[in-house]
Image (cartoon, rainbow, N blue to C red; front, top):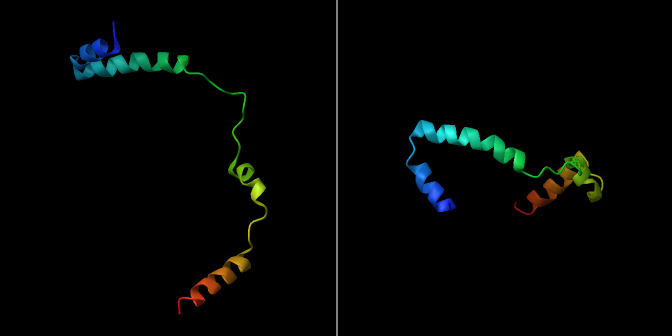
Length: 72
């Protein structure tokens, strides 16, 4: 049976049967998905670590003043 045939049959189901179909298929699909737990996720701090130190509040204020000075 092809995917198209299955879809045609599924479209003929009532709404409640479609929901039951999804409820039964979802756990099986989840079990079959590959799980890559070998690499831990990096935090945002870790991702940005190579960018160096952040500018200070004073440096940000100075840059803002410089930018807005050009618009006056």
